Length: 117
Image (tube, rainbow, N blue to C red; front, side, top):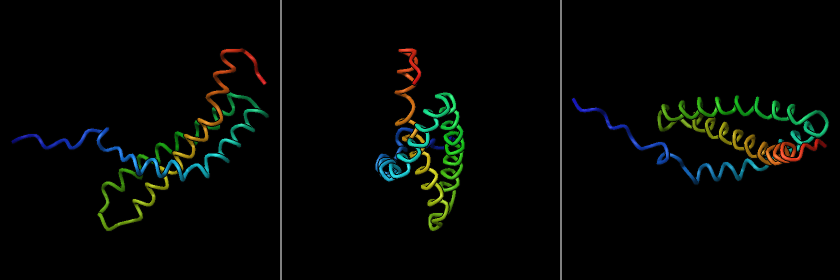
């Protein structure tokens, strides 16, 4: 008995338009999240801001994976699993973009110069 077809490779399954659209829509949430992280960074510490950023990122990455698998296994006429998967991906994009706007450059500057604002 022959092995089943493994399907397309992971890079062939990436939906560029879907992810780009969600990333653009998520900018409305990424700005406020970046502002929260910047205020934590300025009032508390850079490490505290990273901890605050990574917690939601981990939870959202897990939720995104869970809802994406549930949507892939759901019947084609069920919209709720697809909406949940899109919502989780939207929030994940917002968290990633907000974190990228607020923390990596500052972390690099602090590491290279030793200056802490």
